[in-house]
Structure formats: C-alpha cells, structure tokens
Amino acid sequence: MSQVFANVGLSLDGYMAPEGMTLEHWDSPEYKQWGAKWGALMSWILSQQYIRENLKLGPGGETGPVNDMIRNTTQRTSANIMGKRMFDQGERAWPEEAPFHTPVYVLTHAKREPWGRPGGTTFYFINDGPERALELARESAGSRDIRISGGADVIQQYLNMGVVDELEIALAPVLFGSGRRLFDNLREPAPRFRIERALDTPAATHLRYVRE
Amino acid sequence: MSQVFANVGLSLDGYMAPEGMTLEHWDSPEYKQWGAKWGALMSWILSQQYIRENLKLGPGGETGPVNDMIRNTTQRTSANIMGKRMFDQGERAWPEEAPFHTPVYVLTHAKREPWGRPGGTTFYFINDGPERALELARESAGSRDIRISGGADVIQQYLNMGVVDELEIALAPVLFGSGRRLFDNLREPAPRFRIERALDTPAATHLRYVRE
Image 1 (cartoon, helix red, strand yellow):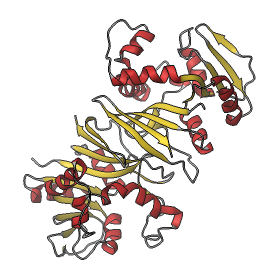
Image 2 (tube, chains in turn brown, green):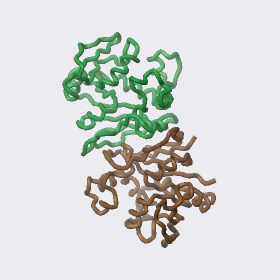
Image 3 (cartoon, helix red, strand yellow):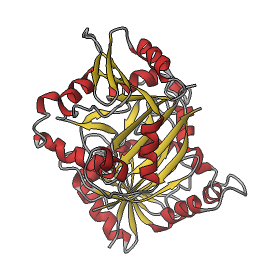
Image 4 (cartoon, helix red, strand yellow):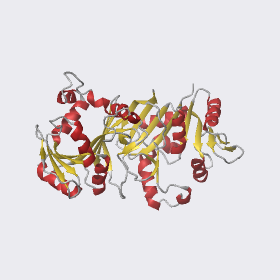
C-alpha cells in the first residue's frame, strides 16, 4: 500500500518558511531577510547533481547519499497534496513544466477545473477537505507513495489525522526567529514516530522518522 | 578561554519541557501526561553507564560514544548558570548532594546568601542580570567551560546576547504538542551556527552546533 510522507526543509528553530515569505512579499526577498534565510535553509539541495540536472542549472553537482535520497523521493512519489497558499505561490513561481510530474491535489475552497501542465503535472482542486484529497491520491497513486507537499498547516492536518507514515526533515543550521512552524496546532495524543536514520552532512542533518 | 555552551534534550517539535511540568504539577506527572512525555525525552540518558553510576541506579548501562559524550560534558563544566524556575524545581527534586559539583549562578530577583551543598555545589543568587552571572562564571571557571543549564528562557537570553559558543541538542523522536520551546523570543540577527556533528542513535539524534 502507498506510504504517506512529508519531506521538508526545516530551520533549527523549527520553521518551514521564514516570516515575509508570502505572496505579498514574494518579489521582495530582502523583506525581513526572508530571501537570505530561505537560501540558508535550501543551500544543501541546490548543490546536488539530481537537482541541478532537473532545474537545468548545468552539469556537475554532488553525488552520494543525499543525491540518492532526493532522487528516491522524486521516484517514489506518484501523487502530491498541497494547500492553497503553496499552490498560489507556486502558480507564480514554477516554470511552465511544473516540477511534480504527478497528479497534485490542492486543498482549496475555490472551484476550478483541473489544470494540466506539460510534463505530466495535473492540478486538481479539492473542495471536500483533506480526507477526500487523500482518498483521491490513494486511488491515483497505485503502489507508489503520496507526498504531503505542504505548507506547514497542511502537514499538521495530516499529522492530526494520524495518517503520516514517514516524516523526512532536512534540518539546516539556521535560526529564522519567526515564520511558519512545522510543528504547531498538534492535537493530543500526537502520533508516535521512531528514528529510522539521521544522515550527518555539513550543510544539513537529514532525519528520517517512521510512524510506530 | 572558557567556552559557553548549552546541552539540552529537545522534543522533535522543539520543546525543552512539556506543558504541566511546573512547580504546581511537579508531583502530578499524570497532569497532561507530562511525566510520560518527559520520560520519552530522557529515556536515552538513563540507559548510559556514566549516568547510572552517578545517580546510583546500579551497575551496567551502555558504554560508547553517547556515554563518552555525557562524561565529557560533566568533566568540561566548571560553572553552571540557571534560571530561578529551574532552581526552584530542583531545590525540591535534587538529592542533598546536588548534581552539579561546581558553582551554580542562579538568575533571580530574590536576595539570598550562597548555599553550599555536599559534593562541591554552591548556589550563588545573582540579582544583577545575565551579563553579571556570566562574568562571575568566567571568573570561577578558569580554563574549563560554562554551561547555561536552563530553562529555555535563560538559554534564549544568552543566545540573544550572542555569547553561546556551542549548542548541543539531543533530539528525541517524541512530539509534545505544547510546553516550553527552546527556540523562542530570538532577536534578529540571530546567532549563526554550523553543524559540527550529528550522532545517529535509535533513541535520540545528538546534534552539536558551533558558533560561526
């Protein structure tokens, strides 16, 4: 059966996104230094060969366990679920060939026809809540896996539903001070995870937790 | 020169202490399940040989890199700084031979004579703020190191002063949902750290950061 997982970059103080990284300030990366903070959070990934190849950043890049991990995350995923804010920001920022190459279920109150993009990404706009989105994702996923892409509030909803099987966190050594926390609004009893692996690299610590 | 460091256990969602772990509920570990949460946070340490020996829990226990790390933390420390709440709770909970064996500088508004305990711990009550406590700790520390023992609010004060040289975190795979966060109330620009080491064990991930 499909595994449900989240895979996120996290600041040392627990933020997925710095304050100011909103639609309003999307074009102002100097606002509250969100651009610099985001860069520090994500620096490890842009140096990897698999990402460089996919984003057409040119040849070269690191190969090794982190690169293998990123490739595996992409290859295992056959459906994505995301929130409206992440979609709205992405709609402005992604290239025409949106970087998912799977069905993407967007949790929203807005009614909209499915939106297909070159490269195999189709966005479906789901008005019936996170359970329904997961049901549709399971139907489309076959035996491969479902990624809860974000943002933080969407991951929190699925954590509270108790359906997140794996949590992968790239913990970067940067303090944001404010922003959107990954772990917030959790209901008791919280889901229980065990550590499956921590991969120590100079740029980030790659933590992998599996639900008990 | 002495290094200033903090060494804490942290829940995966960033809490140093679960909600309910207060003087009021100190004797009620079932209150909001704080006892069970604290146990999950600290389970890795009670299985170590050095701790078992020190707390007189009996022979045996794990030896290895985690045990060496704990011994090293104790041996490098020649002064502790803590907040009033941590002291007040400890005054009730510590054995007569308080587990510090160094001068301990307590940040408080209460005036009180130094309080010596068997085994080399003396508590000094500092009314002049965190800078003064650090100054006194540096004077007493010699070439060994100064530990900011806690709680979270005290570590935050020293992070905001920019004087924390090393941050050691044992990240346990437990979600508290609420409590006292380690990283909160940080002022910009936040201090910058680099990853020095992440030690992967099944019970906790031992992260070590050094100030840049």
